[in-house]
Length: 223
Image (cartoon, rainbow, N blue to C red; front, side):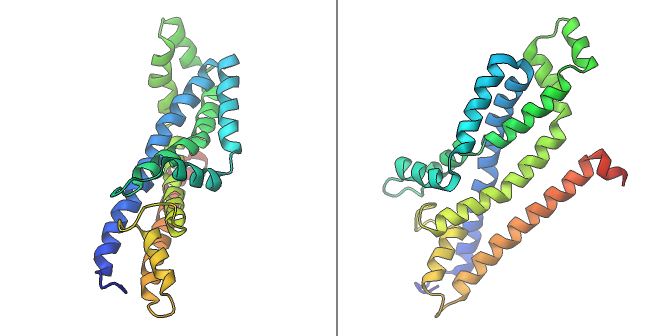
């Protein structure tokens, strides 16, 4: 690049950072979302009401604005990459979709005959949720997580591009695009390669999510 750094090495290291955030943030958010959605969908009543109001409140927040605010508040100290602060902000703001999805699935399944039979045999609520309900929603949950991965990668890239994500000199694809846009007229390849890597990765995960959804949906599979 314009500072004499190896662009390929930075692209490879940036892939580690971007993919780590892309996988780990949806994973942590999915744990929170499945837990809250499972409790809300199974117990219903006041528990469901207040948990869904919490989800509605988080969902109503302007996502990118509050991502930036969280990043400013959590910040990054001297010598830190800012990855931890970015992960925390993304997890706090991105669990609601899976929580609502899990709740909807459990509302459909909680009155099923196999669940009623398990209750009559004395099974506890959390056993029923973990043993019977969540496994029957696993396909929908996996598809949702698969689509959340490219969204997290793009969010990290955008925030790093505007200087609110991963802190230099730690490379990520977004921060490399930020560096490249400053020298675009002279060294356009510095912007081109990380942008292409972001596009290909996001497209690949979206296509994988489409294929996984088609494979796990019996209606689509029958066609």
